Amino acid sequence: MRLSAELPGTWLLQSRIDVTADGNRHIDPLLGEDPVALLIYDRTGHFSAQFMKRDRADAPTVARANAANNTQALGGYDAYFGTYGVDDTTGTVTQRLLGSLSPANVGMVLTRAFACALPVVASDITGYRDVITPETAVAVPPADTAALATAVTELLEDESRRLAMAAAARALAQERYAWPDIAARLLAIYESLVERERRSASVQTVPA
Image (cartoon, rainbow, N blue to C red; front, side, top):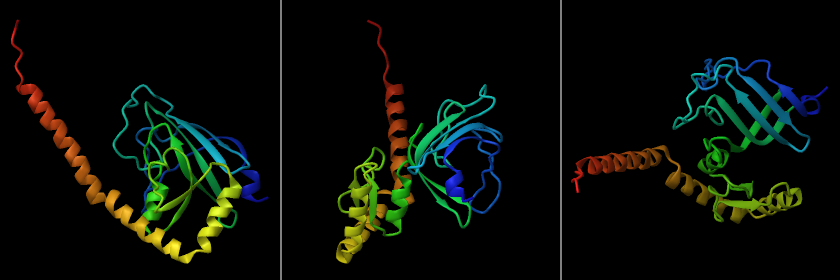
C-alpha cells in the first residue's frame, strides 16, 4: 500500500523527533520531548496539526522572535494548517504552511523561492498576499485547480515573462528578506524603543 493512499485521515502522534540541518537531535523547548498531537490529512491535499506540551505549567505565553520549526508554540500549544505532498518513492511527506497560531514563517516558502530567482504561482490567501507582488508571482483563488493549472501553463509557455518574474523575485528577496537588512530593521526597532523609554524616563511629573 502506498503512503499517499494510507495517509488521509486523523492521526494521534506516537512520537516526534526534531533534528537540525546538520542532523543533530533538537528538542523543541516550547513543546518538550513528548508532546500530545492530533494531525489531520484530507484527500484534497490539505492538512492541519495541533501540538500540546504535556505539562503546560511552565510553558511561556509569549512567543520568541524566531522559530526553528514551521511555526512556534504559545503557552505550550501550537496549531497550524496548509497543504501537503507525498513522495511514495522515499516515503516522505512535505507540508507547506498557509496559516498558524503564531505568524512565524508563514509565507517563507515563497521568500525562499524568490531567493532562488524563481517565479511563483500561489494561492491568494492571507500570509501569501503580504509577500507576493504582481511582478514576482501569479495569485490564484484558493482551491481553484483550473485557475492554478491555467496560471502554471501560461507561465511555462511564456519564457520572457518567467525570466522577468525571476529577476524581480530575486531583487525583492534581496531588498526585503536578506538577513542583513532584516537585522538592520530589527535593530532600528529596538533602538527606537530604547529611545522612547529614555524620553519617558526623562519626563518629570509636577504635582498640581
